[in-house]
Image (cartoon, rainbow, N blue to C red; front, side):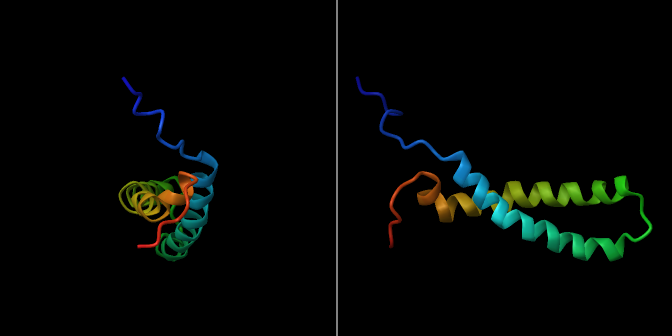
Length: 83
């Protein structure tokens, strides 16, 4: 009986972290540029309470799946297949 996980490539956590950083940093910065003037005078905990759900939902349902879909070849250390 063959082991199906033996032939699967191991994803690189370092490569995934690099891609996430390259995408999420500018996204967070842009969101802050929009939210800071709108929340001027708010305590930091209130700003964070507004920012956190926006960021988490965007990352979980938008950014992370897009990164996995478009850069799976890079994360899995495989040659890029041009189709």
